[in-house]
Image (tube, rainbow, N blue to C red; front, side, top):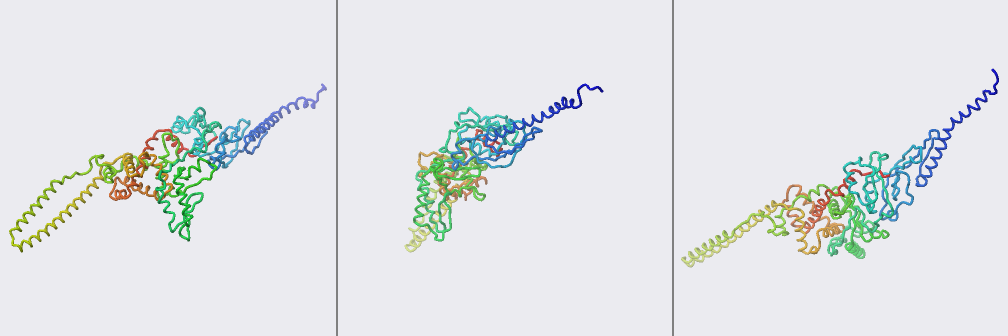
Length: 567
């Protein structure tokens, strides 16, 4: 073959090398692109203050990122007041990290691995948060619920359109909480939050959601007499710490005069101060003296003893108090309330259970105000006939005695007077027996008389209490209920007596009617029964006022979704 000046080496140099370079270029490009994306991702994670484990595959152009997944809850309103009312200084700009707008108490619950190619594909894992705590926190900051959004969420559930607003800014113009895509929610409700520091319109001086303020009653020292008298029982010593009063064994048996005076002064001080109570889904959580707790978070808080009002399986006192406090704290403007009044108590409050005749027998209602329920007796004619008959018999006996000999006349007179005395005694016994039969018959007719609505019963009981100067004439039913709840927190004996009457009342309502024993129980505790009717009337009014409102839609959604994903 002739040599044309090109050898095999030349062919490899001019053709093979460029082809090899072209084959390596994609690898080099992937390497540089991957390293550049990894650098951007690391800078993005660093700006967002996120700790992550990153790995890169330069050949396949894949970046693996392991980010922690958290469960979060709002900070304590009192202990972390500064962080609670301010936004995070380093919010995350990564999609899915809207929750970093606020300061949270976090707990790592796992790791989530992502495989991405570009920096804009990175997603921050959503956090798990209790739905009610999230809504409570936003409400406390000043957010406003969107009625349309909650109604839509209640009716459509997970099919609620992405971007549907649930909470709005205080001016109602911007979305504060909205429905987010379900990409990372694992079947849970997915939400996104947005907030600005200028939207925070509340502070520690405002009463937070799930709390109720109980006003101190006038003349509180009289109401707390039993509480102050109980501090010197011989078998217990009552001392005070940060949680309230508790009993400790004491070998000496009684308190010293100095300790007694100190406790009495504290009871007097507590009775003159407003009380704020936190009511959770499980009943009362704590009770604080108003001036030290909500108004000034820097002051040491004083907790009151509330064990007698906690919900226990063997006692219903806690249920009654939580239901009454919920009803007292709920108004037409109430957005969120944590405790759900049991259905059996709501049903009980709506049923007419107290016969109107019983109210007459108790002296709380005039008989003219009730429909006719008792048998009327007209004994005037019978009494007159009996009186006339006795007079005739006496005259006939005296005329017969006048015709007798003196000795016989004296004997007949003694017999007549003895006979008349026995007759009068028999007439009195007959009349007493008849009156007792009629009283018993009247009591039975009273138990079977038409039953009145709880609200009507409470109105008459309030008038009765005011007439006996238990409460001032100017107080409304709601104000009296607030005073009663305040006293129930401080006075365990008073709370126990109220709840005992309520148990008896509910028992006869469930059994179909009042019995004699039930009537005797409330007859012995008339004032307590009268005050108990006010609590039930308050529960009835609240359950009727809130039906079909935004609050009911919101509560239903909170019961459906206990935990949500926020990102």
